[in-house]
Image 1 (cartoon, rainbow, N blue to C red):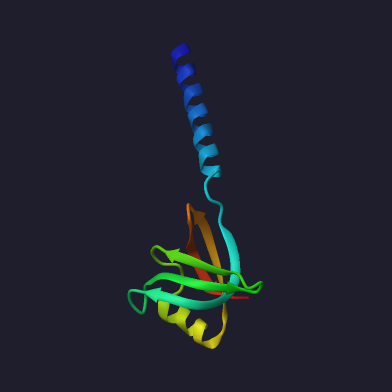
Image 2 (image 1 turned 90 degrees about the vertical axis):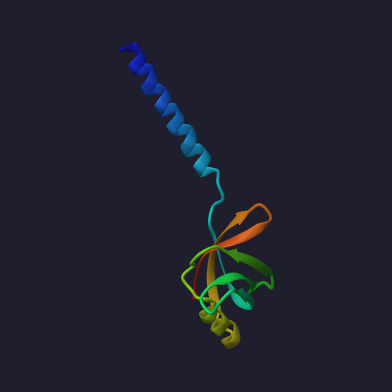
Length: 104
């Protein structure tokens, strides 16, 4: 019985540590701005893009997988001067876009 209780305590402690580690990971942020450049492998797949915010910061984002907008649609926003909203995480020395939506 004592060994079982010890095992349960260990599992609870390990689960707590894992939750703490996950909570310390990169937290998503959101920014809105105008697209000023797009790098793509196809009309669908975005590799990276640059954004200018209202306070004139220029941010560069990398993309892995689908983010909710194709490179063609992102280029349309760039040409028309329409804003986009980007949800992203900071990873080491780069920003990785998670989602890209029509700006509000």
